[in-house]
Image (cartoon, rainbow, N blue to C red; front, side, top):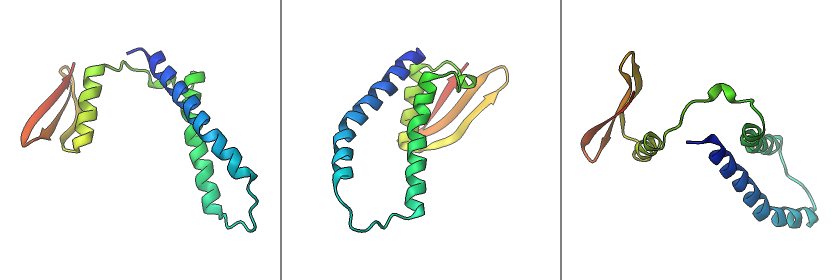
Length: 117
């Protein structure tokens, strides 16, 4: 898969999220607060959430995460999403030198295997 497709999806989702949340944020900032009970824990969690929001944008705009480039194929990705949905991984992904990577998962009482050469 082309990584630019994923980057376009991240950018589009960011724009949509900002368009949806923007008016609500402006309205909530205009409301007078008699007394604030915001703790340092809440402030820290908000900072953590904002950092988590900007990390995908850093991935889109810069080569900061270029060390993690590897081919992402659609079929194994869909299979792994199905495995994670069921949470029935019997053998985690394991590499066997010269043979590729494999994993075994359970679905409906049957064993299934995934191989990537």
